[in-house]
Length: 114
Length: 111
Image 1 (cartoon, rainbow over the protein chains, first blue to last red):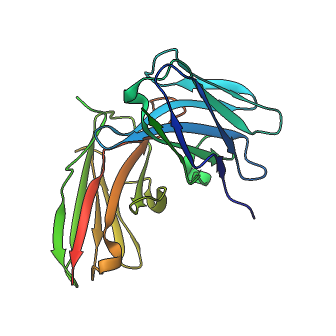
Image 2: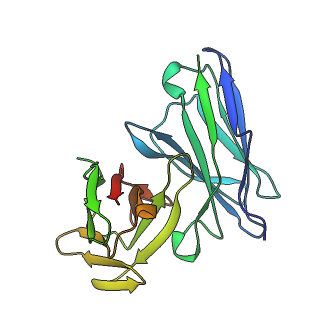
C-alpha cells in the first residue's frame, strides 16, 4: 500500500514569492493534517482537512492557506513568503483525523526562503 | 505555558542502559498519548500509544501514563546506537482535531 506522498521534496524561494505544496494521503484516508517543523518551535499544527472541509486551524497568519480535493489530496499555499517560513512542512494522513487508528506522516517538503 | 512540554536534551546514555524520556501536558481532559521517533532528516514515525493510566510495554519500549499528574514517559531498555533520534511526545484530546506535539527530546546512545 502506497504511503503518504509529498511533493516537491525541496524548494528554494525568494522572499515575497508564494509557494504551493502537495500531499497525497494513503488510499482510503480522508483526513490530511499539515504541520510546520522548525528547530526552535518543533512541530506546529497548521490545519486539518476532512472531506474537503477545513475542520481545524492552528495559530498561523492568513498567508497560510490550504484546500482538499475530492480525491483527498491536499495542497497548502503560503503567500508573500518571509525568511521565517523556512521550515520542513509535513502532512499526516489518517482515516478520520484521529491518530488512534493510524496517523502517517509524509517525507515532508523542505522549504528554504532566501 | 506550552501545551506539551519536553526536555530538549540531548539525553546521553551508554549502550545497554535504560533511557527515560519525559513529557508533561497542560490539558486535563486529554485522551490519547503518543510517542514518535524522528531520525535526522526523516519524518516522525509512531512507536507507542497509550490511552489509560499505567504502563504499556512493547518490546524494549514501555510507555507510562499518569493522568492525575498530567505526565507521560517513555522508557527504552537496552538502548542501542540505532535508538539515537529525536523523540516526540504528542497528545490528542480537547484541543480539537489536531495532534499537539512537544518540541522533542534528542537521545544519543553512545557505544
